[in-house]
Length: 294
Image 1 (cartoon, rainbow, N blue to C red):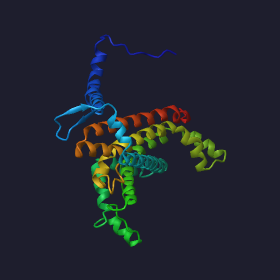
Image 2 (tube, helix red, strand yellow):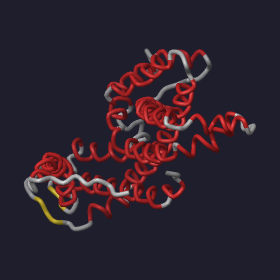
Image 3 (tube, one colour):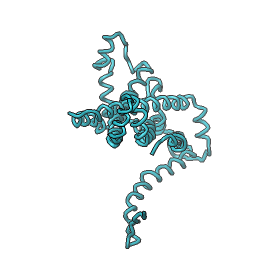
Image 4 (cartoon, one colour):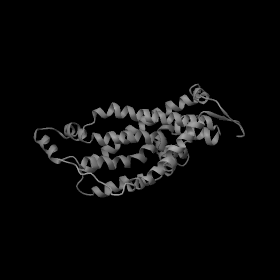
């Protein structure tokens, strides 16, 4: 069977159609990335009047800095918990919605709403709920004997940003999981049920392998989300505190560059962060994708 190919009579037309996207990619992605890479080899004085080429000094100072090494550790813990929790909870909610006959549309709509909220607003909402002075959740936990205070306790602060970032991402994961579950043929589950397989066994042996491409896609996307898109959540809730306990790499890039005005170090951090994400993505596509069943 031959596949049909689209042939444009005008050879210039395909390039014109692609040009707007290429322009956006170059201006907003490639150009800033190139500037950051070049800036990472420079050092400016305190007043910004003199710039010197320092080669890899910015990179070597970073890996000798305990604060930066702490940010790497915090980022690893934060990213793993956010990715696992958001995927697990979204999958559980999608399975529930897929089995509902009545009110499934209302249920799905309510779960999608958090995705329309900006990360900063999501962070502020969770900050208000867990505020040690006026927060309703902090008040409820005090009634249970739990002295919650994310302003002074590093563990409480980490729990807060993980919950806020997870809550923000669940809706996105839910949409894809629900679409994947609805594409699984019912006949396969019915045949397994006739053979005596229970609901749990049917899910893990039939349904979950069939939605593994969706799971793999969301896993890659959630790691990128945890490392980049959670900046607004952290800035609105903890601002990297207390004592840098929630200062992930992307927030340290902002703090050192726009607050500390150390542009060379900030640029080097952004290059390292980009390299980490690329390496993790390659690892996932090289080894994890082998377990995906298309």
